[in-house]
Image (cartoon, rainbow, N blue to C red; front, side, top):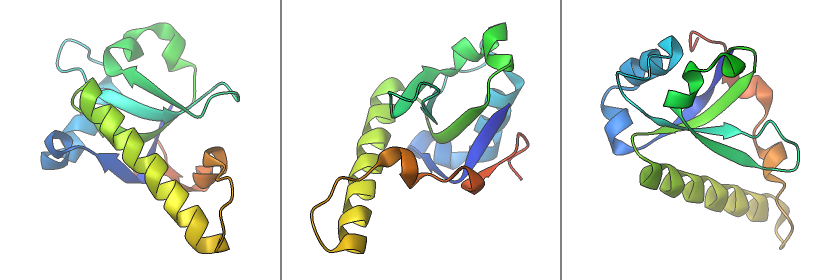
Length: 120
């Protein structure tokens, strides 16, 4: 099942029609349009994954819980979004502690901040 972050990070293309883009991803129709989803990594040794939505067509992904934090129209924009997320997490970590400390990005996103498959 796909869980969407409530404050979904989007590039300019996706911001124009966010609901339409989410619907296309949810329907798993790779021939319509390929987007790039930034997700929490399923492997605990990694932080994030960037997956082209054309891969969601495979049966393997129907069984997985995917926590999407961002959606971009192309890979280059997905990398820019990811860079912004990491920088924001680092700034928030420094402001809250008042000192230089390691920000654990896996803990930055709480799974309670994700909505179910319909985005509600």
